[in-house]
Length: 424
View (cartoon, rainbow, N blue to C red):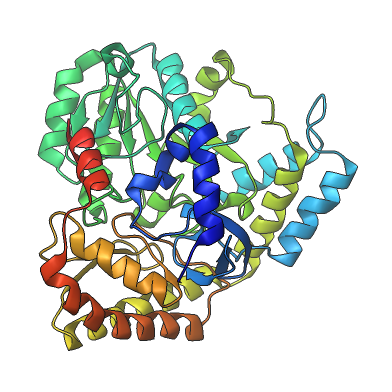
């Protein structure tokens, strides 16, 4: 597979974009030979700038829930775009979408719309502090909540003051959480909880019911708010806030990714217990009132409420997990597949430096499958059993090729550097 157009674009990008690319798509974080630029996407597939097509197990890092270029959702977006998108004020769709979301999300009495997950998580901290008049916000070690100075995993360009009053605890560890709450004392404003542990480079971990209830009880006892960061998992593991499956309702939840099937919108949802705090802060953005993404979100909500997409994702995820485990065992490998099956994390056993994971991802790419060597992945409802079986068949062919490469594998320097930076 040759990437002539992609290579030319990288050379041009290197002259006008820092490092040629930034964020989670930074060139040094992907396996060698992975395409950086894509020309089109439809359903479960993406096509790179050189015309190569792949089944995409990243789903744009989460925004793609019902398939790329879904005709109904995109028609809603385009129809509103022709009427008006970013105007001097919002369209009536803003009120309709807020009504629909507060009816759909059990704990929500209000929402504030924004554009990115980082917008929503950062507002959650501001609302919690405005509500309580306190400073300290607890987050789990290693948890990702966005790229603002208070939460970015890479600390270059930030100050220690940016992370002041943000003590940590161990996810799913009640004793660690209790100790952090005790240390924060009467200055505790909020506890931030991920819907499940989805830290990069690590096995994913579902929350226990006891842990979730303890987070809620400790927040209540301290007079603090509970925030669930549902940006990554919202509407992908439940039709409500993800912790609704555990019978635990937060005071605030942040949402993004797939709520408009790839169109740019996110939101912060809150209960009346945090309404005064939400009314006190100042939060805005030039494109936060844009109407076309709200139309797409309404069409996406229609599908969420009136289809069996969630059950389908679960079935497809189980099919993929079983098939990959069987294929790996057949060829003498062992995979660590963790997290919700519709958001798979696929790591290799005995692979501390991700050399196997990178090589396997390269072999899968050569067979028409785009997967990630260290980040959790996503399934979408446009995928079919045939797509999943194609992924499994590609793996069955890739494992022997990986076996032949084992003696020559080396750690990927970019990932080693990022892991060191995150750990630091």
